[in-house]
Image 1: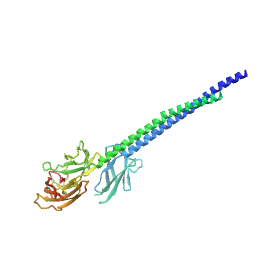
Image 2: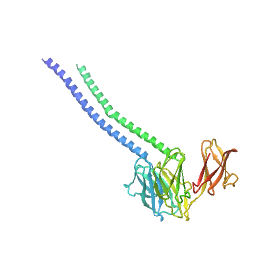
Image 3: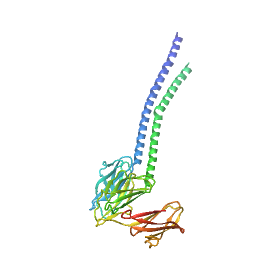
Image 4: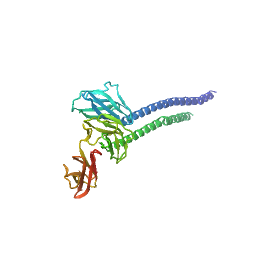
Length: 149
Length: 246
């Protein structure tokens, strides 16, 4: 009788343990699966975003197309042409003057557009050579050397 | 029995573990790698396109001439010559500080297009600087720098010139003679002179001439005449310069 019970319990416990072990493997495996899928999705999205940003950065193409000043030499006019495929935001530097002054303000120039920048207040003297730098939000620059007439 | 038990359990776990690993590989890692590869390909394609566009921009070769034929004076005529390998599309014409948008102004390689600037009214006794902008972001200035609208309401040229483009085979010195009117005329100031050309490249040079009119040009290389003909500057009926290509 005792031998019979023993053999029954021995037959029952391997099945239970196999079920428990399989359940544990499935639960842990499922958790790892879910985590890896989430992690990989986030990693892939971050990578794609970074590469697209980088592509936009290298796609920027713009020039300072024209510069002039008013007759009394107090205002500087700058025209910027974006001949690239992506829209850009820019700031204009003339010597120590940055326009727009506020660090959060940028001038938007759509792809294929030329934009006249609002007159920049400066003090110009005849014959003076100005280095005009336009920098984009993505970190690209375009330069123009202007001789005040 | 215990031995069989352990191996059975290990087998089940191994199979389940392997399935999960394979599942992770196929549903997470491989799609991620494919997406990354695809975006890398797009990036590389864009880089290639941009390199090509930059190269095209560098190779744009445009000459701009402004003149005013007597029959349409004082309306300026703008001639844009494309001596490059690519079609050039002009998007804007600048007259001093005023931009003028233009549409459908595409110049085929090795050809030119003329356009009357009838929307522009000149002011007496004023200098005008003209330049054009291409859709590739290049700026090309009017050939002679500026033109002057005098107090009599006539256009005046700053200077007249003959340009030389020598792509003749081989390198060395090319002797150039420019005479007024004909071969028997007097030498123009600065003539004769030599243009040096390296074997593989095209040589460029120019000579300022005193006025519009006909000039006789003779180019020799090692006593061999390679160009011997008259050229005419038709100003104000044409540009203030003429080009001799050989």
